[in-house]
Image 1 (cartoon, rainbow, N blue to C red):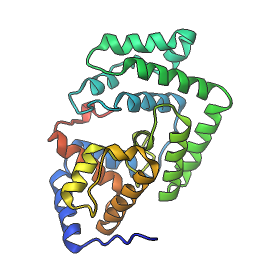
Image 2 (cartoon, helix red, strand yellow):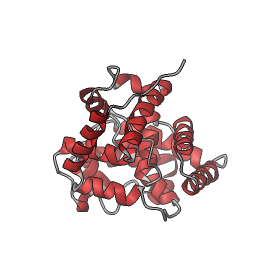
Image 3 (cartoon, helix red, strand yellow):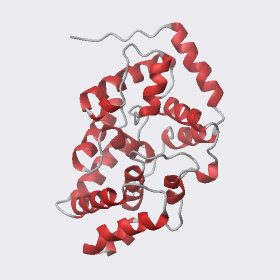
Image 4 (cartoon, rainbow, N blue to C red):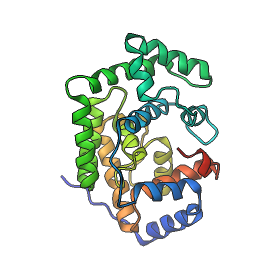
Length: 251
């Protein structure tokens, strides 16, 4: 069985009108500059680790421009940077928990600490880093819808705490995705209001097949509108924060 996506002219017009309202938002401009550039530099271990931590922090807690997650992520030096975490050895879990707890306003410190310990063990052992960096480099040099989905599914399978949404969030934060976007309750609410052909449930997005189904419809809409999915995603995200993002706080 196949599903045929039919995008009406009024749908295209509605998307273009929506984008026009947010095209000057700093968050949208940053997404275009980072994710649509052609000369994307190779990803470093430090960069990958930083965004992996940020993605875990944003799971099930607010990440708007004034949120604790954003303030923690913008702390210089970053409290949980790769080199610092690597030095903690067997004390990493308690170190992460303490750093998150002491900062204040952040939830799930114990869970995130456990996930980071598991992910560091994976990356540092059994060629984890080699496999991860090789995958990202291959993906960086050959960026397609298919390769993005493949990379997201690999991250979903290998990293603790990463489901379909956060695996795509990580790729997007690294500037490596244009088509596969992190679909969360904001995107679901927007699509439902827009008139998605079936009523969507944010809770069901943890299922990979359901996620792929929603993503396919979203990408088809973007294709008809001749806009990259990552740009519409940025506009939707910015619309909920009502211009609160500035260049200074966008990591």
